[in-house]
Length: 430
Image 1 (tube, helix red, strand yellow):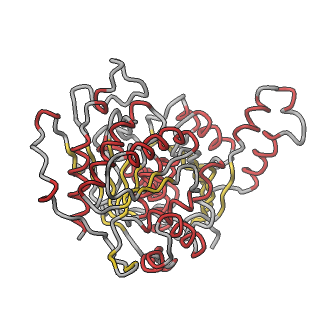
Image 2: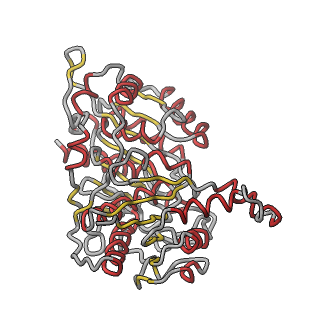
Image 3: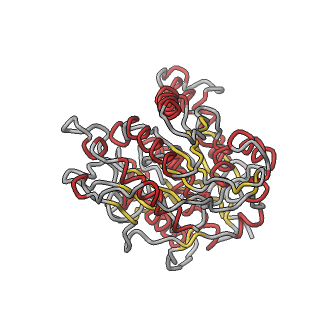
């Protein structure tokens, strides 16, 4: 029997690529003969390379194509980037293309691939729906339905059209990710803990990773755990000496002492309306270290170097006995993050790719600090995930710039709220 050849189009960004994994896993589950080719930008290819879900990865040559398209005289050349890219696509002879991106460029890729069946959402932007043969009529930008639920529904829609496959969504999703391998685990272990023992205790084999499923709430019918209190409604914080001690999710002996819980801070992301002020992160880190014997790990890319260094320095400058803080900013690849999140107890961050990666790994509890984006649609997906948000009148606005120039949804969010959620999340895991 010939393979069903499917082109998956989700070019960027990291969180969106992660949110697409369960949909493609659903295709493989319902139609195992499917050969999946995924087109993606270079920056996000690592989580698709050597991924059991993906048979072939095509890198979208964004910059090269843009350069060619600016000069129409190059289009007729036999070796132009545009011609070579299109020839490569068409040579695969796809049976269908599924556009999860919903933009003009992704719709054009679907059309130019030569796939006779091309599916996407009715609410695709930039007129990209004009390139589709079949459209799923869904309230795609609803604030109350998780984007993963939408993506899985689109995958099932494709299979009904192309293969006659019919199945009800069970609410169980899978996030296939490539295994980092022992060398990566050992390197991350050394950076964070200074030894290999915890890595070996917590490392999961490829077979285990393939067989694991995450039973998660379906956000179309169930709200995530959201802390939505204004500062004036906060109860007085508990005294330090009466605060319950939080212990690591997995015990490991180091020098005769139980390993301390490890918490990843992810301060940065793209939109200013999603970024919690760095002073809040400093306060959270200082208070967390004062109350609990924990380890804090800061991560981020090159753009977060200055902010994360500020947070790191201010925490270390504070009069805190426990100063166990590690700064891994601009030191972790996507595969490194898979290993890191497999080893830690908790990840805290805004609506961003690394936080969604942590949820996909499934090991740490995840806490999302949400500002402008809708948490029911974009909360870290999983039964150990929760959200902290003020839920003020203008929130969520889903805008990259605050129309009031205050970003009050984040500047007014007290670190004590996040600290309480951290304590609750870790205690619930014991």
